[in-house]
Amino acid sequence: MMSLDQIEPLADDALIQVVYASTLSLKGRFDSKIFDDIAHHAYRYNQQQGITGILCYGNGEFLQCIEGKKAQILALLQRISQDPRHKQLTILLAQPISHQRFKDWRMRMLFLERWLWSDATKAQAQNLAPFLPFAPQGWSSARTQQFLAVIQAFDHPPHIKAAGITYNALGNMVRYVTAPHQAFLLVQGILLLLVILALGSLLWW
Ligand SMILES: Cc1cc2nc3c(=O)[nH]c(=O)nc-3n(C[C@H](O)[C@H](O)[C@H](O)COP(=O)(O)O)c2cc1C
Image (cartoon, rainbow, N blue to C red; front, side, top):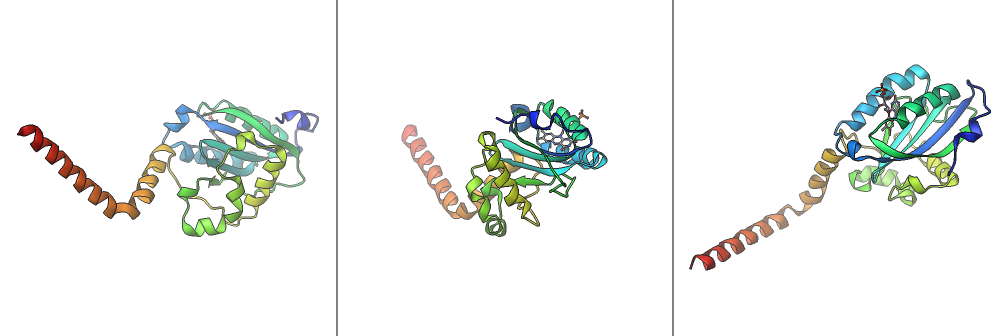
């Protein structure tokens, strides 16, 4: 596991990049506005502090890359690490950089759940396949670097806008999974009804 030792000797205004993985907590899971809330804070705070990066979520785990001046990055990391909506924050990468590789301070989100993607997204995101199912908690720094190189290459990262994990993911699942099988579910429903009626009339007699 990496630590922040590598950036310890650097000056406060040195440009650094920190990547961490964390796990969604129970509190986070029941927070239907978690993504909107993080985006809202990042929108104001990160821009003010000159911090850029990207936030990825999938499979109950986060991976966030934040870049900026050391003092500001460590302060943000401190805030984020106290957030009860996630746990087990693990530093995957901490290094000095020559320039900020992600231009977006809005902390654009990348959802690494294949079943949430459209066909167009799937086609664009072929090279993300080796990183799925998304489990960054166990990644080495080399693997983390490979992943960053892949997502950096997207002009428009494959993502969908979701208001929350639990409700939206469930809603999406119902839509995507049941929609193609509507006729089947209808027939099953009718059969179930007939079975109940048959059992009911047996008991009645
Ligand atoms: C996975 C994750 C990533 C986050 N990323 C950021 C971020 O980039 N910028 C930010 O200002 N807050 C971020 N937050 C939110 C902060 O943890 C915190 O809620 C927010 O800064 C408000 O802090 P305050 O309540 O002390 O004002 C993130 C939270 C989580 C769970």
